[in-house]
Amino acid sequence: MANKLAFDLEGPQRSLVLAIHQLIEMGGLLVERALEQVAPT
Image 1 (cartoon, rainbow, N blue to C red):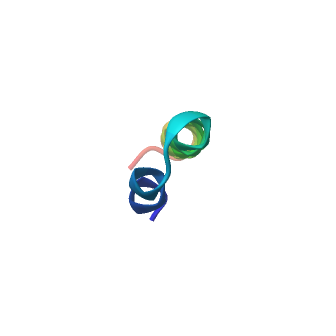
Image 2: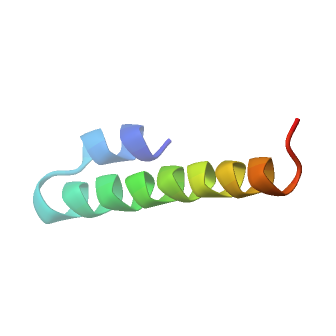
């Protein structure tokens, strides 16, 4: 959804949306890694 929105925008707004999307994805990866360390499968 963020990628679709980003391609509808231009300039600084587009960069901001893409940066927020990247931070959200990185946060998800960090949570998955932490959960794997706490309770390995």
